[in-house]
Length: 364
Image (cartoon, rainbow, N blue to C red):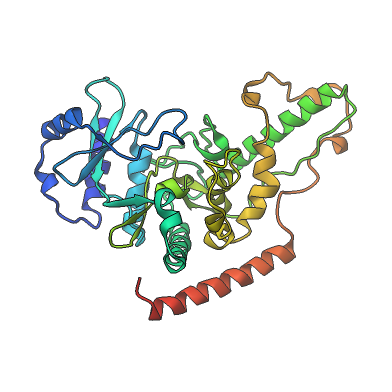
């Protein structure tokens, strides 16, 4: 794995490579900088219930070191894909180093972005600057969706080897998979709904059959960041919008990009909730009926009690009870109406045309 990480980091550094004095630093020198780093950045105690991300500024160099407890190959590879195929600004990966202190985990050494996360400064931005940020995000997501995937039918994170990896983030919470095919991931979603249906039926002494819809596989898999929210979007001193923290990135249906946005927009605590002045533009940013899938499918799937997925439930309950399949099988696919889809396509075409015209006359 170490050789693979080194190769990925080297490939990422060569992609759109801008030489940096830090390239001359040895691994040993970087390790010493990390061990002595005291400038922890990105801390937000009011939000970090489970602890702040361990990201340190490696002064006097324009570098940061981010600690990752698990194999970071997928994060490095996702950033490499983005740099090779889009104009989306992402931090340049300079080195991947093992954590010598703990003997496990890794340090991802990247260029330091001189700016602020959108969560900290959104309220200070004027309406024109907000509009520029929103348009940039829509453009970025469109570009991500056009990136050729190495394995078109394998969902989840990627590391360049073609092997399926476990899905994390969003409604996967503590992880799911790995899924060798798109159909396997769809079956996992259907199974979660079926398990909930069985649980409801048992609790109601066999009188209630909770209805659910099958997972929609009509949209192709595309690259999604899958952890987009105001904290992972940065605005630098030159007013460029950056996307950071690609740990959950992977191949998913386009509408998965809305999931983290949606969760933060509906957070129970007002202190953690995405500002309405940003949330109202989510349909524009992600587009393509993504909000419909979130509101009508994901929120229902994610409404189970914590730990429900670990409950022991007999998936063959209905068969053993001799119950008519028509009473419990899903009756449809979770998909917007054709009229809604066509209306959204027209809106997307209109938005993209406006953005194309804007690009000809406006310099950000």
